[in-house]
Image (cartoon, rainbow, N blue to C red; front, side, top):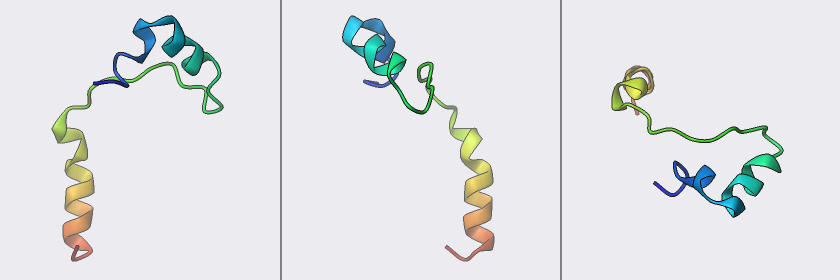
Length: 46
């Protein structure tokens, strides 16, 4: 949750503003977004 709340403090907003990756913040991902990764891993025998 620390990254999700990063933009809630002045220090966190500075980290975001100075990011080389041009990030704008973070959100909590839904588990089903990773289904494609699970399917790919299964096909690859992982």
